[in-house]
Image (spheres, rainbow, N blue to C red):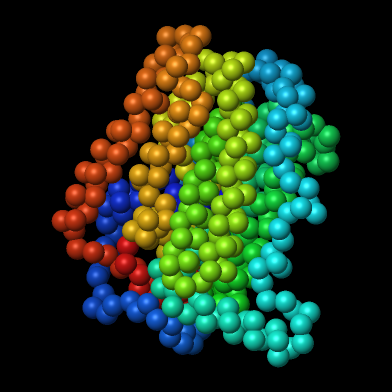
Length: 406
């Protein structure tokens, strides 16, 4: 999953990075530095110069969505009735383990004689040497998002009617969640190891960020309701597909074809997973068009928050906002991408032509189908306002406290 882009998508938890940073500027003053950030590799400063001790965890975040169990109990029967359909239409989108790629296929081979292994590490470092620090900020953010996988499995297992009741349930919903988690687990493993071997990032600060993030959880607003949960995962998996696809493109342009292949391979997984979740929502819209339409509108009114929106490294209270702004500037995950994903799902699910709706359902339909153009207009105005402000730069602990432009 991600920057979110994969993506970058997590100030407020909505995915409008320019708007977030404008809000952030009003909350705290950031003095533009006099130095410029180099895109060439330089020896990292000593750890004592960049890592400050954190005596206590960050203050508890302000959570927006704390409603629980909002799906009427009788609707759980819908998911029970769809178990056979899920077995035939969702589970086949998983790959057998022996047909799945594994992280080791992309990494230096530790079974080689030591000189050969270290030569492969040296080649990896040479490939990553010319990639700019701001690229690593985004790649690290995507990796951290992937590494918080325990939170995402936990979130799915809060959903009424589809949770894994025993830990090894034979329900197709539970089988999907476990196998999806197992496939996703490779993403963070691979990116983390590659980043570790590159020597370009501060692994201690990255590991702290991961621990903080898993401890903080996530606040997606899904209310134990699988209607809302599957709308969320449909959007989120496509967002990570976009984000990883763009980090692949930038890696290729920056001279690291192996990293490009890694990010592209992860993006391919995300697209397959998106297809599964979107199929589920498509089926819900078929069997319960009004309930499905209201669920889409509910999540879009809340705005889709990226899974890592509670990200913290012990230093920067606005870390996710700053990471999102860098991703927006590099074109890895942007407000336009958010609008594109929404429009894609509207068309995939046929929301404009959906029939059998109540008055409330038709109002929800009008809201959702008119939302993408409004997001684009808002983004255009936000970009124009940002042009009038002095560019900001902040220090990211992940790259040894180097200053990065937002």
